[in-house]
Image (cartoon, rainbow, N blue to C red):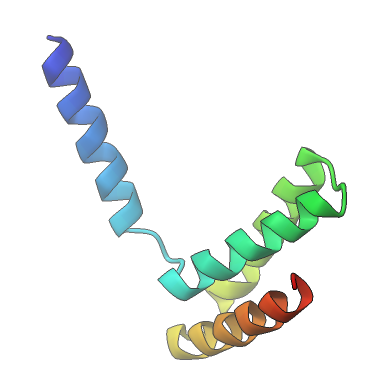
Length: 82
């Protein structure tokens, strides 16, 4: 039973990840933004709200445009983080 539960949870997690509307580049961008937000002392609630807004804005864009925006943002955040 335990192995079956683990297999089902793993399948569910992989399925949800594969269905994510967030391009890989945007996930990387969010990770950098989240790290910077924590360094700035934002609360977990503020970070959650920020992530929600980020995901909403990305989902409104065509995939190619979203990827380009996220690549640019990742580059900028890389410079800010140094």
